[in-house]
Image (cartoon, rainbow, N blue to C red; front, side, top):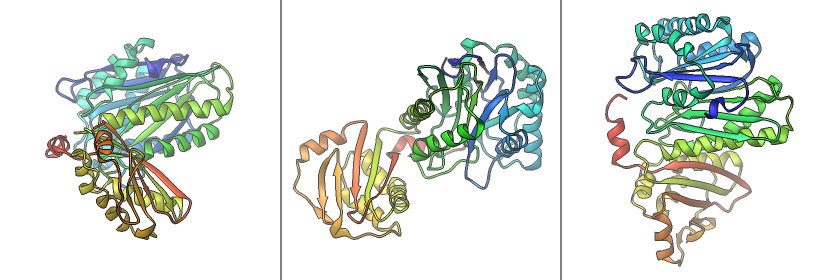
Length: 386
């Protein structure tokens, strides 16, 4: 019950009929229905879905507060224009009525297929039923209700010395830096000012969710929301920030392991770049390169593809200064082969989690991304609308 682990939060999930069989709606709310401090980060895709537009507007208008978040999966309500925005508003208003709160205090999220309006004839009747199901034990059902092509729910919790912080997330494909096709909802009983909460969430998202790169595609609906009700008073802020980072990191790794078609998860570090910004560009270029990703699927330590991707990234690059290591074993130095223990490298490549470092030897710039391989499973999942 991670999203309800903190004092004062309840949740529920249900099958409304947006999807054929699986749970497809979720609701998270404050137990006393009071609006509490809320912070959020959203997709950087300019083709943002109506729920994102609505939530940005609501939080800007009320100074960062919310009493509930209602979510549907199976349909992103993206590419739906003014009608889609009206549907998102109605979805929030019906949830607000069922909860007895103001509609300005209900955030709305959607995830799923793009370009099709929400089946409001299914969502609206299910919403009051969902509100009646709210309970402390409803966290797991809520985590199920937000999934799309995920295989399992993703939940995490940290018990601090004076607070609890928990959360749930979904995300599989269409994942790139600047978040993923992902939604994440966090709750805490700590007392944190809105500006502080926003800054801590932004930093945590940058160091976790924004390092995950499955396929280079930034979704239209990405949203991370954290609610803080302050029931247990003000925490040690460093401990709280560390806890928020830890929960986000845990959820990020769970998303990577459940990515569409994934068989290998790669922790890729680019070091020695001319700047951190250039390191990030190189890491993104490598992680999104299909030849690189195919070699990961095959367990092939093909360092030439890594350097080829880095060298084409438009950054400062001098082959004779580079080194490439798999699992800490240097396989290339100065832009060519380096003598190494091939059996040890092969053993590392057989693992589900692979560590790779591309050292550019030019400065102190560094970046890290989490990438996955490219194999038949990903192609099968994305060869049709899903």
